[in-house]
Amino acid sequence: MEGTCPVNKKLMAALSGGAALVLALSGCSDGDDGEKKVDAWAKEVCDAAQPQLKNILEASTAIEAVTDEQDPKKYQEASSTAYQKISDGYAALAKAVQKAGAPPVDGGEKSQTEAVKGLNAASQRYAALKTSVDELNTGDKGEFAQGLREIQEEPPKIVKAATTSMKNLQGGELGQAMAQQPGCQKVADSVSPAS
Image 1 (cartoon, rainbow, N blue to C red):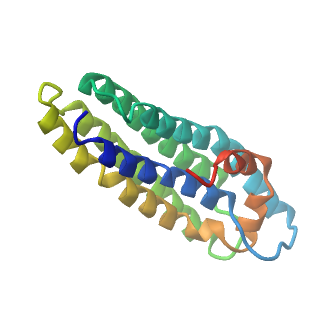
Image 2: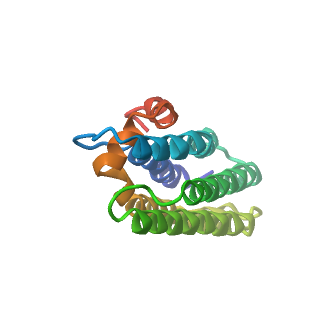
């Protein structure tokens, strides 16, 4: 599609921000007191998060696969499906963090509340992107490309906000415990530096 390639590459960089969220969820910090409650909480969240993070990455890859698609309808269908999948993934992540309860650390309830709020907001914003893509005029390539440019400005903002909302779960003993959970490691390991 004329004029959409550079925008699509920007979109992939943004969607791959989902990979940043994966790495953020997998955590990284100094020190681990080895408390069983913290480890149990991290295991519950990471086990539930792993399939959702995988789905988000697969949806990002699906959009990448149609980056050079010349047929606006095919691009629209693929993008719409991917945005819905990403929205569902963020909603499921929010449920997983909510279900796990407040992490057993200082400020755990606040960290949980912020994470759930941020993940639900990301889900809603991706659902709105799906609606916007569905409403694009595929009969006019120029208009379609312009509409895509506007839509594709949003994913980096969404990912940044979601990652920020997870910051308190990424640090300290929680981050260390999550980094040791296979459920978080599997997806993080699948994220290449290129993405």
